Amino acid sequence: MASTSLRSVLLIVLAVAVAVSDAQLQLSETFYDATCPQAASIVQQKVNAFVDADRGLAAALMRLHFHDCFVRIDEIKMELECACPGVVSCADILALVARDATEKVGGTSWPVFLGRIDGGASFADEVNSSLPERTDNFTQLVARFARVGLDARDMVILSGGHSIGQVHCGAFFERLYNFQGLNITDPSMDPEFAAMLKVQCPPTKPFGFMALDATNGTFDSAYYLDLLTNKGLLESDVALLSDPLGVEYAIRAVQDPMAFLNEFGWAMIKMGAIPALEPYGWRKHCAFVEPKY
Image 1: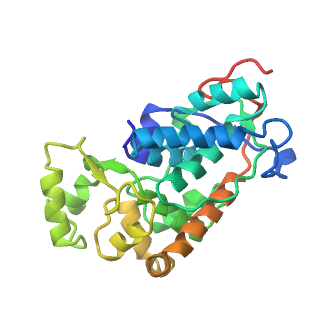
Image 2 (image 1 turned 90 degrees about the vertical axis):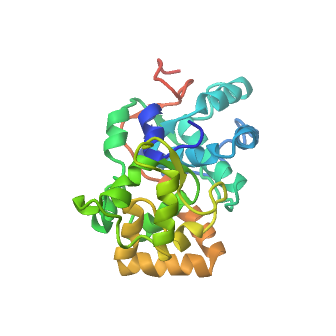
C-alpha cells in the first residue's frame, strides 16, 4: 500500500472531509504557536520516520492533501493529542504531512497556513467520484479543477505530483495493448519505452506496478521531461501536451526545475485554502467522526 497509484490509494483508504469555513479564511503559519508550538516538528518527525522506512510512502502522503484521505494520519494525530489535546485539526495535519513528505524526497518546502476546521462527514465515494479520471482529456481536467477554484495552470503544475509514486499496470493497458480498440500500441508512445513497458507489464499482470516517472522516489521535474519525450503513462498525463499551456509549462519545468518546485509549493498553498462545506470542529481521530469536544 505504501507505493501505489493515486486511485489505488483512494480505493483502500477512508476519505476525510475537511472544511474551511468563512471564519477560517485568515489561516496563519503561527496559528499553533501559543497552543501547540511543537505541532509542526512532531508531524515532520513522524513523516521522516515513515519515509525513511519506505521511501515509496512519500507519494501517498503527499497526495493525502489533494484528496483529504486517511493513511497513517491517526498515528500522527495520537502523538499530537498526547502533546496538545484537542488542538491540532486533522485538516492541518494533512497540509503539514503533504509539505514534509514532498520535501523529504527532494521537493522544496513551502509555508503551511494553519487553522483549518475538520469536516463532519467522510464519504469515500464522493471523494473518489471527484478525482480526475486516468482517461480525462485536457478540457475535462481543467473542468474538474475549476470546480474547486483552481485554474488550468494550477492543474498542470499540480499534475507534477506524479513525479513520485507508482501506478497499476492495468491503468495504461489500453494505451499499451488496445489503443482506441484497435489492438495496437498508442503510436504516440516512444517505441523503446513501449517495449520496456510490455516486458514489465505483460497482459497477464494488470496489478503489477510501474513508476510514474523515470526518477521514481525523487520529487523533480522529470515527469514533464517524460511527457515531452513521449514516455508518459496515463492518458490524463499525456493529455497535458494537447494544449499549448501544458506544452509551454512542461518545457519551462524541464528548463528550470527549481521554478517548478517553487510553483508546486505555491499551488499547494492555493489548494490548501479551498473552502469546503460541513464544518465540524476538531476531530480527536482522523479516521472517523466522534462526538464534538
